[in-house]
Length: 141
Image (cartoon, one colour):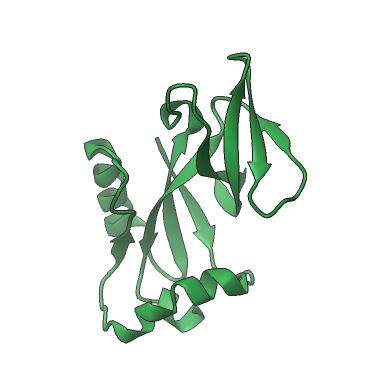
């Protein structure tokens, strides 16, 4: 498991900002974790997130707890995951994709936006929507 850093200095897609605009109604003064209620992340994920909140979550640098895709696959079923594009230990993009294992050797990623399919390895990091934010995120959204 890894915590990949990402910065929201880059432009945020409109659909992303719109999806989370309800956060503006909260008065948060501390860093916080955003998760899916229907996913199981495991105890270690929360330890990693807590460490990140205490030591690194500041000044518009936020975290995404990422998982090797091999740990997130379901028995011979397609799954939707956010494929993390990582550069210099920073998530620069998350490509929401349907993933399918082909011949137990490669994983075919079909982006949900209809863009070109691509292959990933079993070690590729994916997002299961476990994000760590500081209150500075509200000035960006």
